[in-house]
Image 1 (cartoon, helix red, strand yellow):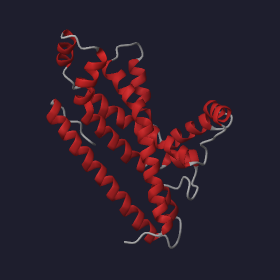
Image 2 (spheres, helix red, strand yellow; image 1 turned 30 degrees about the vertical axis):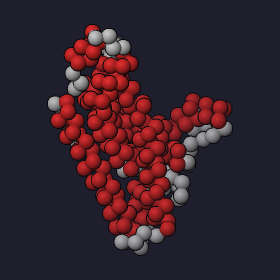
Image 3 (cartoon, helix red, strand yellow; image 1 turned 90 degrees about the vertical axis):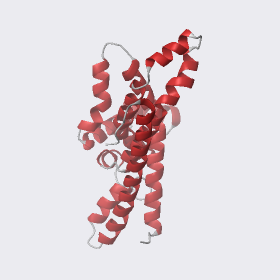
Image 4 (tube, helix red, strand yellow; image 1 turned 180 degrees about the vertical axis):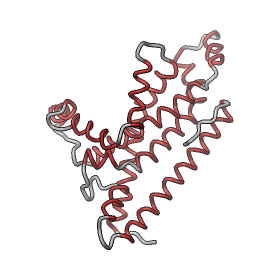
Length: 234
């Protein structure tokens, strides 16, 4: 199977969008996972529901909401224009934002389960021996929850690679800029002679998705052996 230069560009763009989406979402996902796992506050149920909202909303609705937020008249769009003179509409950065939003619930879920599985008695024992909060986090909490964090990242990356509905609604289908693998497959399906392209790009998508799921499951099993928890990939 030989890819054309344009198809290679699509694959590389998809990997870039997925990688940036996962990296940019990671700190937000971890902070939310920590808050939901350890926090006790009014409105926790509401926050939990909002985090998981992209899983149940139609993706086109999520894309439409992003469009409202990042449009020139939208609150985030005005802020980006005023401070950076930039826009994410019809840009690959917008595709990364849409992919990151759709990947967020999966990342938070995997990380939250991993944080909740950390034995609090070990943390309390370290605190009684004089270790500060930062040291307890760096030497106990983070290492024990790391496999779940990595599994969440892999799942988020795979979800970002497969994102379609929110992306095409938010940043449209611009060749070389926002045309990722799912959008390119959809475009090829509209062409009378696009079947060969569909087969090639779909094959690449399947290989990447299977590799991500295998990696996530492997990491999750390691997490289960280390903490007594199995964070299932799916």
